[in-house]
Length: 319
Image (cartoon, rainbow, N blue to C red; front, side):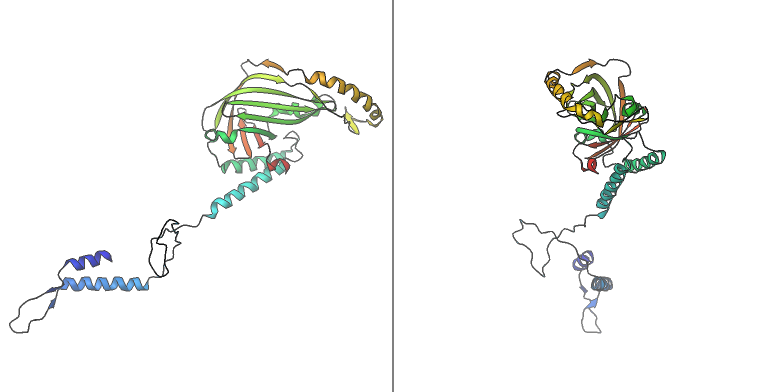
């Protein structure tokens, strides 16, 4: 409309031509009539156009402010799409379902084929919605201690199986601690028994090889100093070669054994942990992180195995 108006103003509105037979009067220019009709049509269209409403964002430093009924510059602000919020809620729901499916599986050792299939499906869905598709570029998220919640790595199953552990000893926790500033990883397994707790760890260095993949080289192993418990707790019964043994009659001996254990505790606790180097050719592996956020990490090893880890302190550990 502005262009039509400017063209209209730049041309002479009337052309005067002398006519000997008629009194002099202005004669409209045909081109001007065309422009006038176009202008009127544009104005009429503007009147029929439905009102357009925008949200105005006022500048707090604008000393003029805004007045009702006056025109002021406004910034049209689009409402924040709900898609992001809905996507976050969907991811949270999938994470809770995944962690819930681990119940009773003993980190994957006792998972049935149906449960494994359900877990694989949930993992696949989460991997497709990974909020950090380049995990090695978000190393700060990798920092900290991660607790193993589930794995399909068969190499850990003998360790998790109680039948391969000493009597009354169980795996308390399997964790991985990452220091992205020094590019180090520590894998740790904590054992607990009625008399003491201890741990076995491996220290490793890692190198970033791709946006998702890191190469890990194990450097040394550490056998932690056993820490004797303050009180000895024996279960009511234990299973030994398929036979249940009642331990109630032995509880009378606990007091004397506990006194002896307390005297030994100070000596053992002061000993340094035992360290040994790892230098064989099998001391290297790679790890692919396929999902990462502030509290959940999904990784796949070079053998195709999957690891699901939860950040220490996350509410997912209590679900």
